Length: 446
Ligand code: HEC
Ligand code: HEC
Image (cartoon, rainbow, N blue to C red; front, side):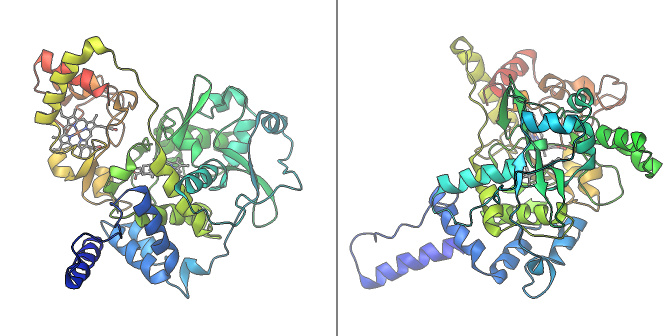
């Protein structure tokens, strides 16, 4: 599409016989200007969105794809008919948390305005600012487990319901639902933001968040009748992992950092979504907000688009590099170029999907019916030093362990998910000690 358009422009110019290139600039793919232009396509019509959805589904047969193909951008049926929901919602501040801790019913100020003022931004900065609010304040759903957690602050802290220096609880909101009730809800920030030295780092995975344990404890305390098999499974997720697939098999994945996603052509660990244009991410976010809110409402599309623009704006916190390390880092860069770059090939050091049988890691997510594609994408490696545990299921505790050949042995017992080998991704396990040290020094600079 894009390529054809720019060729067409050149042809028009050539026919007119003009000597110099035209003033019309075709914005470079993934530049801010291009993204703003793509936004017009997303807002344009259902047929465009439908085509973008279809183009973005790597495997149309898995549950994730089938659900969206059956409901999204069908015009006169499916999710297009849902009411558009611009919620009244406030982030849980220290003061609000204190009332909830006492077991009081959640309340909203009566004059609380809806999240969005209804004015479509025109600049990237405007979209990003709106997207930040969506990320922190748009409810994904009401969550009784969280309401319970807030009445038990020590327990909440133990399952990763973190607080910033000022006592607010990022990722939790109080909001009015469409039935007129005021509830506690979760937002993107409960999984994709973390607190470091009292400050919020948006985009860093909340690796302390133990959703499985929160739910299991809630069910025990409230004697909720749940399938014992499901309880057993959720209890084994551990912090930083969740099974977000809809099927019954057990394939929890780690919550990923959201760094460098503009450079990534495949999204999610199994590469479930092909990202040829930002419409892919906007549609992912639109359908995620629909699905998580039990398919009863849909967000204004402006808010899904803003969310995508905000995600693209996220960069890891700055890191200092020690200059005395420079020769070692340079040696490590050469090792990376020789052993890693062919797969971790893009600007964020991620890359295309690799067949699960080739990479050799636990195949269950890749072959599962939920989001499976048969493959795992090479994940971005920005701020990878702070990104443990590693691999899609979080099997590896450190970069040193990833590069340690001992983990591949049948006799290996030190794995964080239990005894036995941590199979797959053998790259780097055959390096000399000096090359391995150099590679680790280089990875620490990403
Ligand atoms: C309960 C925790 C949780 C919540 C809440 C959550 N996510 Fe995620 N997110 C995950 C997990 C786990 C994955 C990995 C899924 C996979 O690989 O299949 C993920 C993947 C992603 C990805 C793909 C990243 C990549 O590297 O390809 C994006 C983008 C994303 N989430 C954005 C969001 C946004 C925006 C929201 C709010 C609307 C949100 N998430 C809410 C847990 C969560
Ligand atoms: C054959 C392609 C390929 C090569 C070569 C390769 N990788 Fe990977 N890498 C992948 C894939 C695919 C994954 C995801 C596997 C999974 O999650 O199951 C991955 C995952 C990773 C992860 C985990 C990141 C995270 O967030 O969990 C790290 C770290 C990593 N690779 C570093 C390296 C380094 C360092 C090298 C070179 C020594 C290297 N890779 C070589 C394909 C490759």
